[in-house]
Image (cartoon, rainbow over all chains, first blue to last red):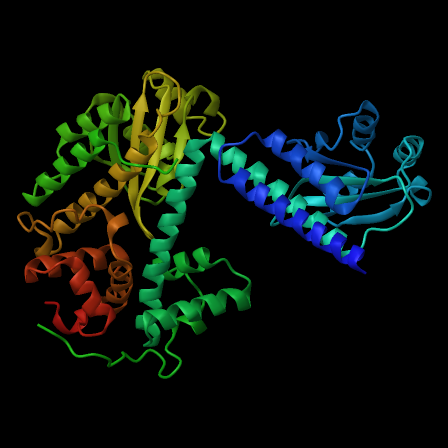
Length: 263
Length: 243
C-alpha cells in the first residue's frame, strides 16, 4: 500500500515536472527539436512505454520523423515506414487516436510496418494526433515491448504531451518570425477594439448596458458556433444578418429612453 | 519581444500631432521623415476599401504616387489587400507575380523591390492602407514593423478627420483635437463602445460616429474619454443634441 502510494506520488511529481519544464521552455527562446526530444523522453517516462517519437507533416502531407526518445536507426526506420501507411499516418489523416493497436492484428492494416515493428521487439503501438483546432500537423508515436494496455489516464496524459508539443512548434515559428508575432498581436488588438464597437452597437440597439451586450454577444456565438471576433466585426460594420440579435427584444425598433442628456 | 515604438518614430508621431492641432492636412514632409525612420524609400497612404481602389491621400514622392496609380488602375496590389484587413509584408516583390500579375511586374519596372502595406483602421472602421516601399529587397528591419503600425494608427485618425472636414462643421480646420488623440491603441474601451452607440443613435457609420464624438469633446472643451463615459452611462445622447 505504502509502496503503491509512493509510486502514485512519484508519477504525479513527474507529471508536474514535465509540464513545468514545458512551460519554462515555452516562455523563453528555445530550440524546437530539442524541445520535442524532451517531450518524447517524458512520454517514455510517464506512460511507461518503451519508445516514443514525433512525426510532423510537410506541406505535401508526408510525415517526417522529427524527434524520438532514442535516436536508434531501427526506431527511425519504423517511423520512415509510416510515411506511406502506419498508425501515425492514420492518426494524421483522421485526427483520431490510435490506441493499443496489437501489432499481430495490425498485419492487415499496415503489413510492412507491423512486421518491422515486431522484428524490432515491439508488441503494441499507439499514435496520438498533433492538432491545433481543425489542423493536424503530425502525430505522436508510442511503442510497447511488453503485453499490456495504455489506461485512459495514460492516453489523456499522452494527448496532453502531444498538445504541448504542438504548442511548442507553433510558438517556435512565431519566435523566429518577429514580424508574424507583431502582426498577430496587432490583429488581436484591433479585434478587441472591434468587439468594443460591437458592444456599443448592440447596447444601443437592444437598450442594454455594454456589459450585458458582451454577455449577449458571447452567448450568441456559442449557440451559433461563431467566432466572437467575426460576429463582432459584422455587427460593427453593419453586415450582420442576425436580426434577432440586433433588435430590442422588448420593443422592436423603438428608440430607448434611458438616461438624461447633459449640455 | 514585445513591439515598442522607437524614439525616431515617436518624434514623427509628435510632428503629426502638432500639425493636426493646427488644422493642417498630414504634411508631406513628415512622410519623408517617417520613411527614414522605417528604413524605406517612401511612404504613402491610400484612401478607400472597396473594389474601386485606393486614392492617394498622403505622400508626395513619385514612386509612391505611381504605386497608388498602378493599384487604382489595375484593381490589384498590396495596398488593396491590406485595406481589406490584413497586413501585407513583401520582402521580395519578384516572388509575388502570381499574386499580382499586373501590379508586381509594373512595380518592379518602377524600381520597387519590397513593399509593406498596413491597413488603416480602428476596429471595424477601415479607411484605406499605408504603403511603404523600397528599391532593395529584404524585410523591414527589427522594430520597424511596430513603428509602422503606430504610424498607421496616427494616419488613420488624421485621414478620418480630414475626410469629415467637408461635411462636418465641427471637424473643420482649426478645431484641433486634444494632444495624443492620434493613438487609438491608448483609447479607453469606452471610446469604442460610445462610437458604436453613437453610430446607432445617428444612423451613421462608425467612422463618422468617431469623428462626431471627438468633435463634440473638442467643442465642449472636454476629453474624448469623458464624453465617451457619459455616452456609455447614458447621460448623453447624440440624437438629442446634435445639430
